[in-house]
Image (cartoon, rainbow, N blue to C red; front, side, top):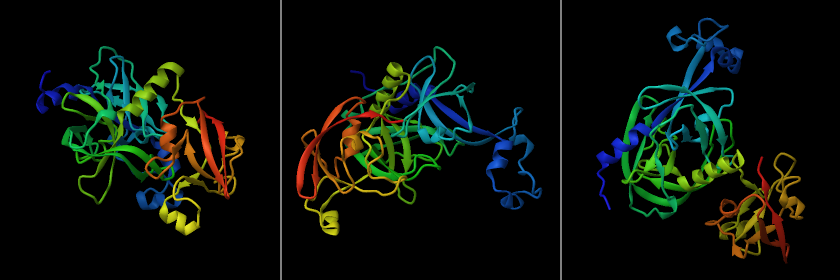
Length: 347
């Protein structure tokens, strides 16, 4: 088996990494800014004071950028969902050789921070997708992207520092904070603008999509496992969209502290919590509601396996598909019972 050097790996990978340019029309930008703030931003209180050179021939203003990488010779690109989250913006891809392409967003994953893009091209260099389930602690990796949107082809090296990590983050500015689970932790530096770039092994195989950095902490970065992206690509190929299963619960994982605080009879499982139509614990017309689940029920097991803080309901759903039937053991008061729930597609 051939032994690679990092220099060889970098030369192989660089042509596949792209810059994603985010643009918005001047008119749209002005509409988004409250009128009472315009005088603070511009001497002309009726419009933004943007230098003419920052506006292209079509009246578009660059407002940000991110990274991505090509995974198919015909122009399929992976990036983060948060890079292309604004449906009112326009996106363009600039390849490593400086060519600019209009971009179609094929899919945004409703759960994971993944998006799939398409440019019209052929015979493009592309990266091989590895298997993130085989990663080991201490394994060396590279993170590649366009740091801060300014420094093209920025390479940082590190090791796999942790697996199956969970953090609280908002995948885009308009989304609420949510738990991102199953992440790869690395000490390879990931900066704004690096988001969406590949995390690769020395053999040049992608094992993650660079996604997040913890500000104020050193050497603490996170990537989405590439196996999640492989699943999304397969869904897109087979169904024309990403299909993720919906159970329809809002819950809190139970541990010893929550047991004591809420005086619960168990120290594991997931207790259903929520109130009102906007924050219902059991989402109306969902599989969970049709199965008869109620607020304050505790889901103890799924498919004969205990739910814990290490393996939550969401972790089980990551392993299941739309149409699968799961068996859930429920504790209501002091009575245990089992229900079968058929998962539907998350919209």
